[in-house]
Image (cartoon, rainbow, N blue to C red; front, side):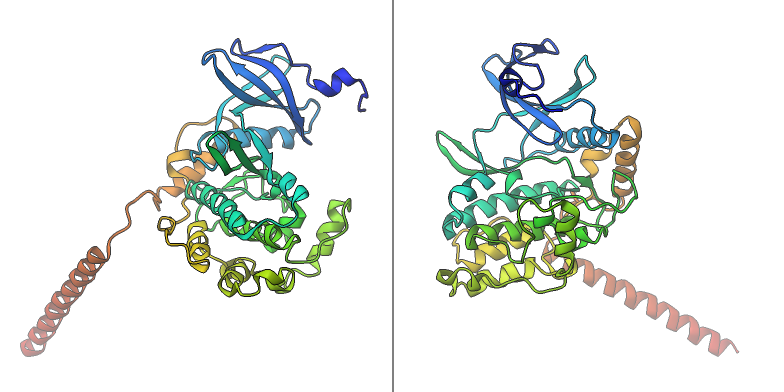
Length: 383
């Protein structure tokens, strides 16, 4: 039951004025989501540093608590200027878990889109470039977000910083090994994510990998440029199950063309081609990595400075090959152990090294063939 008490609305978790863990002094309430409340706090070990503290609501089912803990585990090991930094995780005396994050100043993309339904091409490309850079870092570490949407794309605005993207809310994220389908929430086929931005394989409760995030990123870019999504969506306020069914009826349909809804971009044929590829219903028909999609977008609009060469999605060796406790820790350790078979941090061979290796293999093959031929001749004459 929700209270209408104004004081409760200003401090629903009853934390303002308290000092958490003898370190974080809670100074204000930022906002509330479906599973948690976010507060502003001052870190007394670094006196001038402000942080955001996300506290889980009381009375939630065990799977929500497990998901919250997993968010702390996953994001605490990630490092990128395009990903929100998580610096601490602990439990309040009343049993509520909380995590400490960097305090972001600015607004989520969905608020920007509410104010400006269509974003200018240059700005939209700048924002999606930051989003893809953050995804590349997460995917390199073996983490797929699974719930990308404008609400989870934060635009940082500070003195000297403008339109800097930070990806937030990894509550639905999971660790993956290569293209595997290990889901740390269990083996039950669950539809996880926000229906409007989901990749088709997610709506079908199929295994997902990093390419599901690329689909969502392309849908976000389409929304920024055209003011709508590249496919029909159910009316606002529709129940999740109904919305999922509505989308399921058109999952195999090709995406709409950007030029059909943004006539001013009708000449951007290369940009259109990038969006069409990233929005393919089958994941294997999309880009192989966020870095590849990022470079394709830069090339499509003729950027003189290209993003760095794309990295391959990894399996999180450096992140997850460490002691952990509990069932989730066991799963994460298993992923880290399996990941050692293919280390994403291993340096890629140069073209010269590849040619040298190929010549060496040919030489070895010639020697082996010569030895086999000599042995056969010797056996023939010995008869």
